[in-house]
Length: 402
Image 1 (cartoon, rainbow, N blue to C red):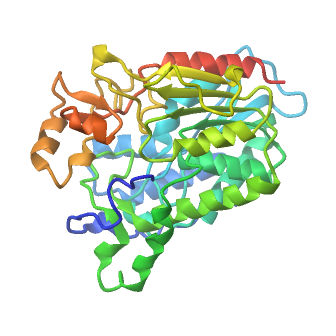
Image 2 (cartoon, rainbow, N blue to C red):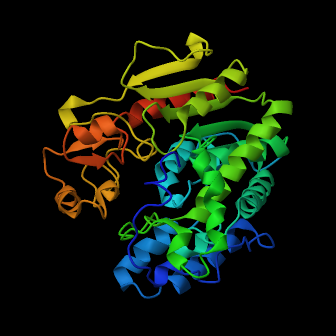
């Protein structure tokens, strides 16, 4: 992450049981099963690790964190060689879960796609399971799920958010079956400080807290709030591997991308550079920005859709990394959702943290930039007020696919 929710030496709170590995979820263990069996195995694993939660919360936790699959809506043609014509694999972001891809899944289903969504190793159980996860294991999971999808569809597409976007690009570089990409705030580059996140291994055996960038309350049942240094190091290594491969193997498949110019978690300029160098005529970029008068350099006008990320009527100052894949109606992250992202105040300003959690009517929303934070009490935006417009742009992109 660009700022990694704070500096790599940020203050931390005492560790809890959730900050230790469960021993069940650092590696990918589903490659011997079909996708339905993989889903069942993963649901059981999540239930075992999170069994201490009350029954109602546990049911929601399992449902939101588990991989899933959807059949295309009725009325779309069958495939010529396989059961379905098109399919898409959805890949969530770092510390996230398949819940973050649910609304995109419904969109693709309603547009004729067979949908599969996976859970990356280390995710969905407890933050401590990311302490030993590797990007190679994430890539194994993506390769497995891509293979499962390819058995059922003529045309394979990948759709990834943040780290899932990077993994989508990586898989497409290895796999000629991939016909196109949908990327949402892709983590194609993050702060280079993450390259040194492994250094903690020299001393964290003595000080376990040193293995963490930040220790947070972990109130969100669909996303880890605590963030281990290993996760940063793995994502950085993946981004570097992708950059190396792209030098000799540029992608020439249709790519739809959406990103926020104010993103503080990934380096958006890397996405702009990637799209400028990917020269397929169908490529399309939706860029959320507070400056709609300035087109990104190097990209043809026809390939770029600028969206004003400011919505004064809703106190929205800008878009955010955490916002693009969720509609305002989402019951958890939406405009009136049950979750508020106030982590930027924890633990350094507990007064503001508590005030932000109350979600007062006049609270500001946006990315956690210095300018936005100085404007007043700020909630990090967790939904996209322009989600319906994003869906329309994706629909037009799909209609142009060969």
